[in-house]
Image (cartoon, rainbow, N blue to C red; front, side):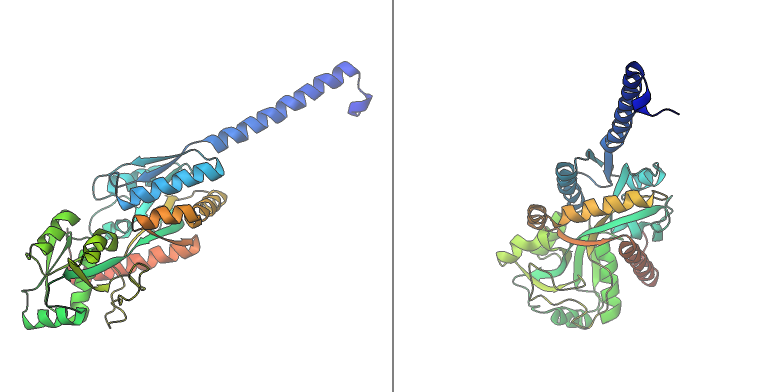
Length: 327
């Protein structure tokens, strides 16, 4: 075969054009693949912590990586509708799920069409929401031990309010109740606002929920914190002890969020996505926006996130069985 230099000028031009067109076509296909919209499914209504997290990170990734990202809220069925939709999606890296604590809780309480450990590929653990136990500012209970001692002295009379039943807070409460042998009563509410109103109105004894939801009441002295259910002391209240420090082993209760892809999504795709989400979460302006909403970035990707999901599933399953919690 003759080299390009040996060909007549017309043929050289023809082949040069063909190669240019081929290169352009290849570049177009690559660009088209890169331009595909990545759908980030949030299985809760707009405005919640998971939704805020998704939108802040999607915006950062779109600006820094040039990726087209769309946040889609698909609430319903205690997060099952959105979760199961992503489980059925094509494993092409274009459909992702913002997974919260309910992701590992639901399969222990109801029939689901997904398994958190086999139906998805873990990408990254993204953030935690610190949780705390509080009482009214005028309450006689100044420390957690005071509240628990009071419950032991008045079996069944003292109460703890939160979202529920079968919520993260409810399961954590049941574990604390068993660990402390304090007979308190859980009072479920459909949302945080009515639960806090019940506490401020002296209708319940205590409340367990996100720190961000009670921060203003704490600053004003209307509420008093007793302990954090988080595994470590929390940044906004560094002097508040954890349950573990107080001698109670409660391995669940902190709200967390991560991102997962459908099972069999290629490794190169999940690795690239992990890099994107990790970098976005660590950007200083992103961290400031999230912390202002009570969301604290906590990055663990790939195998570390898979191990975390497995551990959380085991711990919640054990707690649900021991406390005989049902929906």
